Every structure is written in C-alpha cells, then in structure tokens.
Length: 134
Length: 134
Image (cartoon, rainbow over all chains, first blue to last red; front, side):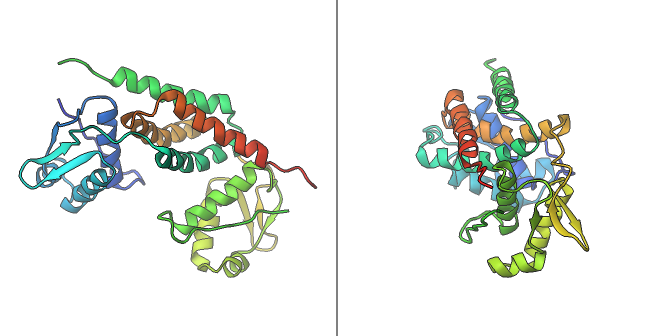
C-alpha cells in the first residue's frame, strides 16, 4: 500500500513539483485511494531527506487542488470524498498547458498522429501500473 | 508579418515563459518563418514594457532549443535552417511533460477520449490560425 517516492535531484524540475506529480501518479494508478493516509510533513521530509518547507509546499498545493485533506489530528489523507471531477475550468487549464507543448511539437515536425500516440502510450502505462493486488 | 505578443501580467506563469510560448506559437502558425527577423532584446523590451533581462532569458532559451539564431550584426532571426526535428530525446521530453497532466486528468475522471479531444481542438486552432496572406 502507498506510493514509492523517487526524486531526481539533478532535474531542473523543482522537488516540490516532483513530489506533487508522484502523489498524483499514485492516485491515478490507484496505489493511493480516497481516505488513504500519507506521512506527516515532518516524517516524509525526514524519510526522503528533503526540507520540511518543500514537503509542506507540495501538500498545501495538493490540498488546494482537492487531492488531499490535512487535519490537525487525523493527519494527511487522500481526499475521502474523492478528487473533484474535471469541470470546464479544469479543461481550459489542461488546454493552456497542452498548447505550448503542441505548438513546439508542430515546429519540430512531430505529426499530430505521433503526438496522440505519445499520449496513448502514457494512458497505457497508467493502466498497467494500476495494481489491484489487495 | 511577425507575431503579436500579448502578455498576461496577472498570470502565475513567468513572463519569459509566456514570451517563449508566444514566439513558438507564431512559428507553429507559420506567422514566423525561418530567417524572419525578430526585434532586438532592447527594442522588444521597450515595446512591450518589460525588463531587458526577461527578453534576454526568453531569447537565450529559444536559441538553446534551436528556434532562434542570435548574431551580433544581423540581429535575432528564426533559425534559417528550420527548427531541429523531433528526435527520440525530444519525444521523451514531451512524454515527461504529458505524464503529470494525464495523471491529473485520470484522477479527475476526465476520460482518455475527452483528453485526446482537447488535443485535437488545439491542433485545429493552429491549422485555422496559420495564415498564408503574403
């Protein structure tokens, strides 16, 4: 149960963002389910050897985006009511993030079909990654 | 000829990144062609009312990624030999950027079909946006 956090300290991507992405991937793969507990800020920071503030920044962002609940007593859990469903505002945000990526791909002569295949491959990964061993 | 730069100073996205994205979109839409000149760092900074260093950061990144050439005499031009084609390293980079976006969409119950439709819509925009009025 739970999710294995692996960070790349050589990456140009900030550590708090890597942490956010890994927790979200854990939820997408159903390794983390609604109500599942996460380590406290302090213990996660200690376990993976990063700053308290880095973990806190990630947790706060995940809370704000509806992935986590943070209770003073119960601790940190994946939002028990489930993750808020995609609405039109969310879809626009996705498009805003996709847009520069697609523009760049067009410039570099990556065809639409190739781009969509890259997406499909990732969806495939997440399906295989989704474990149901309980 | 050229590309109209419009920046959102309220956005959480850094200005230099917005500038990079708009120039890349201009190339994707063929509003900017290989060899086309861009304003100097100084004059672009002045025209849109932003810091010299912000423009410089965007130009340097675009140069590094093969979109621009910067000559001391000839000035800044879209890479005359064309933009480097997508290779396997580039495709992996695209997947690394798509991955958290797709993970998040799965968490939020956005279906694969809906996600791919969002991609298709953007491709459609770029086709319509591509002007051939010379």
